[in-house]
Amino acid sequence: MRSSASAEAGAVAVPPGLLSLDGPGATEPAVAGAKAASLASARRLGLPALPGLVLPVDASRAAVLAASTTLATGGTGAARPAALRTRLPRRTDSALRAAVTALGGRVIVRSSSPLEADHRWSGAFCSVCEVGPGDAGTAVRACWASAFAPDPLGRAEACGVRADELALAVLIQPELTPQAGGVARVVDGAVRVTAVTGHPGALLSGWSTGETVVVAAGSRAPAVPARILDGPAVAEVADLALRTADLLGHDSVEWALAGGTVHLLQSSRAATTAPAPAAPAAMPGALRAAGTAAVAGDAIGVLRYVRPHQTVDGAGPVILVVDRPVPALAPLLFGARALVSVSGPAECHLVEVARAIGVPVLTGVDVASVTGPLAQLNAGRRLASIDGARAELVVQPRTATAATDPVAAVITTASTLE
Image (tube, rainbow, N blue to C red; front, side, top):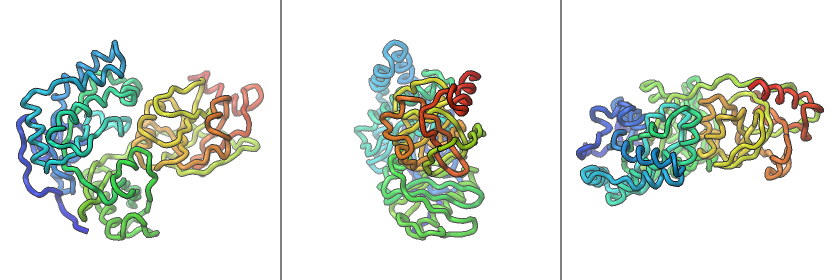
């Protein structure tokens, strides 16, 4: 395992109009976006972040104006093409081609929004992989256009952000082919390492559960050996997480293992979870299904099975039931009491959004075992609670109304007061 203070082969030439992660302005989120600014700070402190070039926030203004103006009359289906049709100045197009060449000829183009310092925006914008010099301009416009997809627009409405405020920078970095990647989080001196084989995108987008091991405070090895990472790799990831926490104050890192080196892909401070309402006493005859408490807390509500871009039918407090914790579900979290996922990881972008707004989350719950087929779940008002201490979904055994059940009366009263 090779440990290095920086992950660069040498200085990168900076084309006109772009910023180097090592240059002036790169640490300013308003200029370079939160992701790029964090990585620029990390490189200055000797952490192993890849080199990169940034097209600043201001370069996106014309595309954002075109998309936000079109959004008012044509909706998101017209807004995104409006951003994609925005012509880049010839000088910018040439600079982007030169940037890709300077970074090795095969890069990843990553969105970097000033909004991403707020965890409510975790996973909202796109990145484009395997970009060559001739594709750079299209990839940049794709990042700008991603701000006008249904997910970011739903978050913008919930957060009070106008569409014309969705400008973002773009970060261009060398493309890695990772052997493994994932998330590491520092909690009370211990490091919780979650890893998947290959690129960490499958984990972060909620599709792969991965493997989680814990490296205790003062240790360099997990209590239970990992299958995906060998001992030295686990130790290197844990060390990166602890160094990042010490130097940047960031207790969560995204990482990738490639070419014998653990690279820092992104880091942040964990969101603060607001206290959740306490769950009621156990329901008579209640059915229980265990899971993993991705975001701690208790909640009570009516179960509603949803998929991305759907609306939630029915009034009153709702506990969302989903197949996987994918980022496109984020807008629905803002009106929910809790989220229960049948599969997927406890460390992903959607969980970060939930943690930021204080929504308890259980993952890996066999919901159908206590409710019956999920496709039929929305036919009635199935009451449930989240028992955070036991990481369990507690489901009332029948559909109920306020007239026949005291727990239903609690929900009805809460709904009336909101």
